[in-house]
Picture 1 (tube, rainbow, N blue to C red):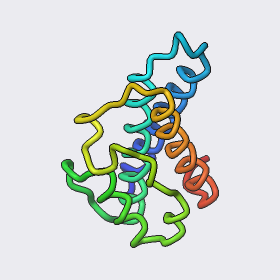
Picture 2: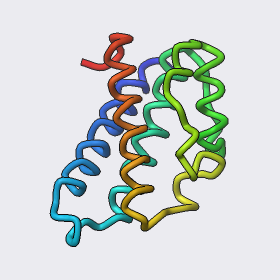
Picture 3: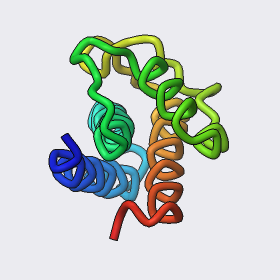
Picture 4: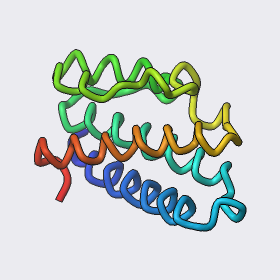
Length: 125
């Protein structure tokens, strides 16, 4: 199980980078859908990777909120990452998207905070 975690972390970092590249474009050129989806997939992959790293399997249909709660149960420091502004947390990433630039920026910020957290925990290079 743990051997799958690095691949998920790599995919999460890749999606986070793609979201960042999109956000760095002039505001009128930003494709919000791409930022939204890439951020959502990064968040989900970070969470699933963390669970696998801790020998915990996650079902394919679990919401981001459920995955997050399971990560917090394993490490309460995960609670430092606030999902309050993440409007898609109760849904699967492939079922929702947002087009508001402010909302997608919040999604990106949450994904970036997860990236930083996992680096502090020495799970990402």
